[in-house]
Image (cartoon, rainbow, N blue to C red; front, side):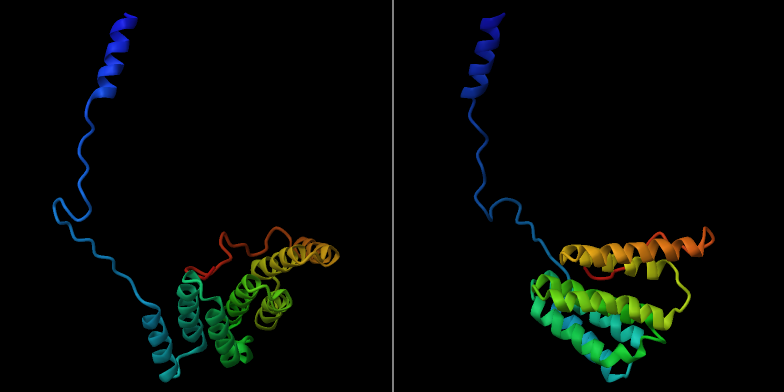
Length: 193
């Protein structure tokens, strides 16, 4: 039995391998990749701005552009585009708190990638401040912002500030009670990063 197994293994090892086809030969399949280029996203944002689009559309177009720039590794340009949108829209935080807060969220994340920790911390606080101006009733969006602040404080090594944010979060969430408005997802669909 052992001999039969040994001969079978030797026969298998000695069998010629199937020939590999050189690249480009075969059935001449064509592969087509479709997608939008960064220039397309930039043009969409420019068209939005040219027609004086509302804040939420400006932010959506900016974040779409920022996402593809970020994925391409162009963090510096992403930072500039988000900063430009904040320059146009930061005063609209009371009327459009979530879109403007999302700009600050992206700015914080990009600043973190660029090693600009102070800017990342300020932007993370600006998320909460924007929500507080536009949505005075504390809800899941505020809680999420407080968690983001606590996380940023931990990353920055500011453990006392992180604990203070978590204590405030626990206090405010406890005061709201079990009937508070909760959401399974705190991020905007398709939001960056």
